[in-house]
Length: 394
Image (cartoon, rainbow, N blue to C red):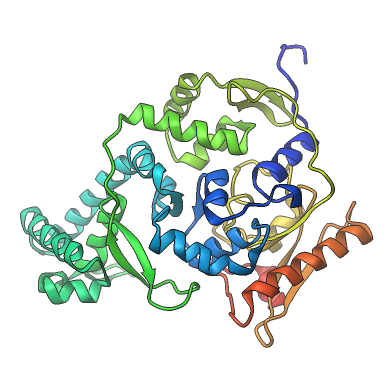
């Protein structure tokens, strides 16, 4: 290019995606820790997404549920906690301190201030009272190991106290101290979600004390997190980075400078890669297909998605809030969507963009659908955020 920067085209970006997101058959992972480490973060707002995202990337998905639960709840090599954009993710445990310092501190301060303001407006007790209750609740949680909010309220009855939120408004509601306080403590990195109350698809969780971690410098933590993500997802634009992290643009630019990121040229403008990642990346060995779940970190990884997702497919594959549903992939681009049929649990898929798919692609997609059904078995999975095509197929 005239500016001296290397041009990274769509074909190479799709090749990078297939290799680094563990989707091409030749690079599938041995366990959930490898998947999480490769992707940096797995979306955890919908509990089923974590398992489905892991299973799609394992060389042998038969033990997806058992191995993911081992990593989350027995070995604690993965942890479910609040992260970027005030969203729940699953991270490698060694990233806990980095996520907390880079992202959680600012969000946590805002969440606590909002809770205290809401309580004050409702005439509820003050900050000193709340501090006393939370210390008592954390002590009870430490004794129990893991507990539900209801179980903690047996030890600390003040957690049951309620206050009116948004009195007189159309969205007025009664809030319980335990619900709001545990959310704040989660964002502050003091508690994390533990085992679900039901199966791996359940959205009701026990709570546990967060793993101990050092307090890091904010700027250093932001550089560390951005470097990890860019190594997995680069090249990415400044807009992609700002969107994924939820940081201010000045923080993104500071972190890019700190890691010595290199600028490259993309079809949509300037992108960035890590300092040691400017060399061309070859295509994966052979074509590949994948069935990824709703909110999968690959489908949601970039704000600017035209290079792997045609704009005309978005109305069918996204809900009104911008959450992606289950997607079908062929060689680095989204070509359709899938769902689990409500009656018999069969995996139903549909190609919406048939260009370049052909007989080989459709057969590969069929194999992936059978592979998915093979380990999901009798479990019924309904995405938390449903999309037009998913509802139609189901």
